[in-house]
Length: 167
View 1 (cartoon, one colour):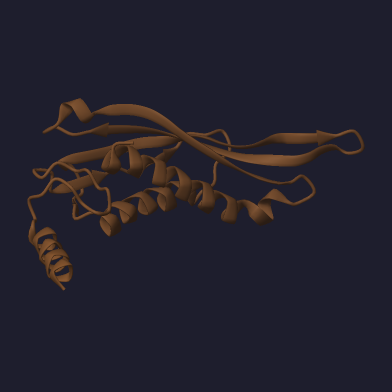
View 2 (view 1 turned 90 degrees about the vertical axis):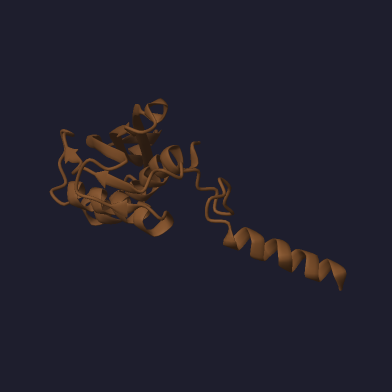
């Protein structure tokens, strides 16, 4: 009985501590950072998906809105994220002697510039990439939306981890 009361007390104390630096979610954002601005990610890749820039930018914004307490501002946020899609392609991932290509790989690479005027030590410029493989006999155009959405989600998660979780 005493343990239950003790644990309940600890739980209430943790829940009420808004200025604590630790959270159960692992988010590690300085307490003086209140908002974030995410600039439009232009597609500078040779192969262009006309909807990709808008979808990627919105996915990144949504990630920070849903999983942090940061407010989204149009520009000059306490956290500033900008960049571009620099690679968007398919390549051969595996071959076989009978048909040549057995598996193809869809690859996406994004250059990110992160700035925190209040915490300049956190600033970085880095490329994030990921891929998904698919059967070479499948038509890429029929898979493109699903592949680009999945790879975009993976890249957004990596960017989020780097900024909010400091991984």
